Amino acid sequence: MDISTPLFDGNLVRLGPIDHEKDPEIESRWTHDPAFMRMMYIDPQRPLSVFQLKKKYEQIEKEIEEEKNLFHFRIRARADDRLLGLGELGRISWPNGSGYIRLGLGATEDRGKGFGFDALGLLLRFAFSELNLFRLTAIIPDYNQPARALFLKAGFSEEVRRREALARDGRRWDLCNFGLLVDEWKEKFHAWH
Amino acid sequence: MLGTDLLTGKLVRLAAMDPESAASAWVNWRANSEYARLLDMDPAIVHSVKATRAWVEKHLDDWLAHEFHIHTLEDDRLIGSLGLDGEIKVHGDAFVGIGIGDPAYWGQGYGTDAMKIILRYAFMELNMHRVSLDVFDYNPRAIHSYEKAGFKLEGRQRQMMRREGQRWDVIYMGILRADWEKRFGAEYRLEPDGTGPNK
Image 1: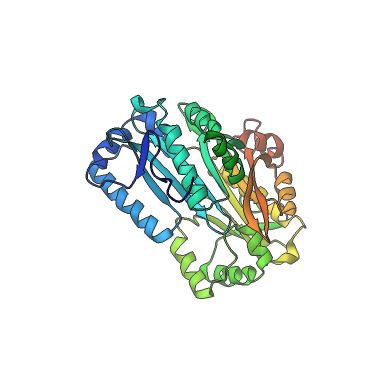
Image 2: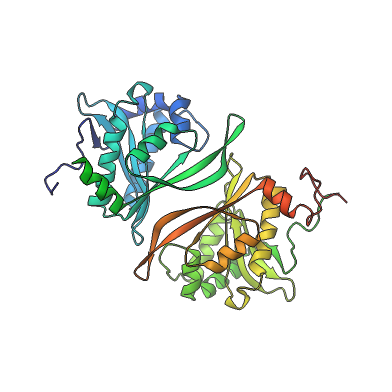
């Protein structure tokens, strides 16, 4: 690993910018799918049109420009450049070296194939080797077992369990914070390579 | 009959936040860097009264929609402020934040009393299912106060902050409506099912 090692290219996926022409139609389909939306977001599912997504992308890029604490990536398949999902490092507190991470794959058929783990590896390297963060937090509802497994596999540990913080489908669920420190990442990272 | 003392406790009462008194009080309190560092993980910085007032005026109906001033009952002195999330979301969970700006009132139960009032407000008026907060490792006085108000430890974000060259955990605490009713229901004359005052 050195300066020439690509930050944005994994084994299966690539991190890239928003494609304002092609992405809205694909993401609009994802927003109609509760299997994606309820895993990715705590706010109530709201399907978005192509028009609404174009506006949302402009807001994201405005926030990146103005707030200086958000990094937003599109996850694409290396094989065919197809849009798979999105990944974000946000709410970064520079004086404290801490930030939040989240990622999601839009289509059910793209899950469980290693794309998420590959993308998470890239996001972690970017956070720790390029942004020089000290730690990351991921907020995961208790019903999202695939995300729990993914972040645990990447070295995160459960730090906070906010009891019954979510209400969905007529019952309550805990909302957990997972954390990863830079030293823990380095240890894991060297084991991978 | 409905409870008529929703905003009054034993030592303090909660009152509306007037932008002018808020601005001068906040600037005054935040001149004490210890206060700013207990309250916020962002760097302690100073704002003018004018800028603070403009910010308060702008956000009175969104971010500050459930924010109150804390006044003492004995002499109606403004000693701090507290509030819940401005936007109440569908899940029935709200974060609470509190600051006693005048250090003369630290450690004497004023903050705990204010917290107990806003918990009653959260559960009996806003119908929350739970209330959350976070607090920094180096603030044991606050943690003790939150425990007295009924909050339980729910975890620690390890080494989340850096101050004075050291890293510190951010501690998460929460209180569930059912636990609050069990512990404080009698004090507020609630029916056993939490529906309202029983007199």
